[in-house]
Length: 519
Image (cartoon, rainbow, N blue to C red; front, side, top):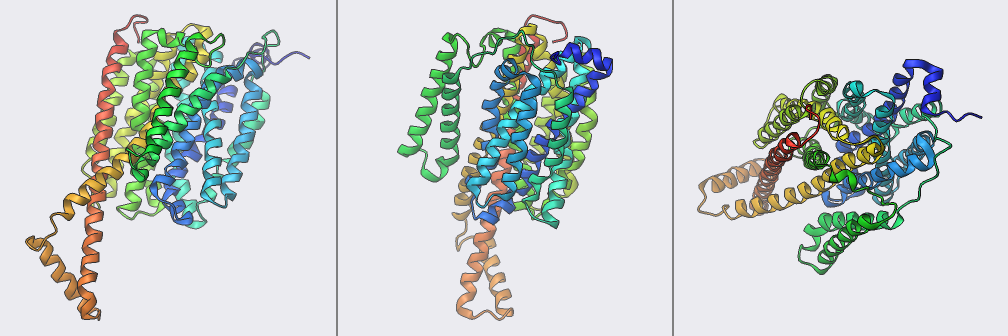
């Protein structure tokens, strides 16, 4: 029986096969992105359901991002060993099972485990989808193809939070995981028809288990150390051991990859100056992007009291605008220098985060929505141009490694970004809480007036005299914490603005390296 390779499928379906393959990989990516974005609006409800704090709840996102980061590097090996069809269909089968497990999870440990599995599969699907498109489209159409494929990436931010909000308001948070099941099932069926099989002449590739183990240990120790540092103490023996192990494992991973006969990461792609600069932009971009995507829904629900549906509707206009700009960005990346588009996009996201640095409990809905829209416009300009510029610099035999590496850089930045911004939010909230508490003295006329007013209100409500002062002090404590929490969010958004501004440096360097004039 003839193996259904890319050439055989082109002969069977003709030019329309390009779009059949594109729709297939888009559906798989939509399933992964819907789950990621719906979880963001469900975090406060999950925290309440299982009685966990922010430091534990953030693993719903960082655990998935860490698994996504590591699994992206498996892409090239899986394609060589099993082919695109088996990898795609098998990954979606595991993903569907993980979605069902998440919806049925009895505690946060099972939920976090299922999220890690989902992240691992999503990490395989993204570079596999990019690799497929680069194989079926000619070079002059790849930018447009990436822009069209980007619609699947942005349908998550556009529709996921809103759908998640509807499901949570009318059912409960468990249904946000079930929403991806139909997409996964349909994508599995299409993948069995339109994804190419492995060339029979290709010998199965060996796998770098040592490198995979070292990288997994490095990321697990680093993220665990960062997420528990606030609770355990940054100078505690437990945290120092974790961070030390992360450094040692990371250094051992680099040393091993330089000498391994079949490395998990082919460092030849990093030797390309333009690709290395693009990877740096992707890392910084991921840190700011995933971090801000985590902060905005959390802020509007915990500080402003938005419902999950309102939080989803807040992100929806930005997602729809992104749906417009992603194909435009792909079209322009085929015709304009990538550096200009990337710089313009980074500036948009930086300005948006700077504006969010002044939010408070009374900031209007549409003010925050406009900031999100400007941010997503930047994303629409950056993503296609960055991918095309990075992979355009590589030889065809390095495309599989390059697709995995550029996504690896972005996801690694995202995993660290969410963790670090969560730490920053806790630390800055604690800092502002202490600073404001020190100002609440008898000499502070505003504080004294607030306490008198609260005591009068409590007296009118029939509260006994001996409880009126303690009630007023409790209210003052809540006011101080709410203001401190708001200031912590402000500082976090300003850090995101700084991170995106910092990314302008490697973006500019990327355009100054040798290669295509459109880089």
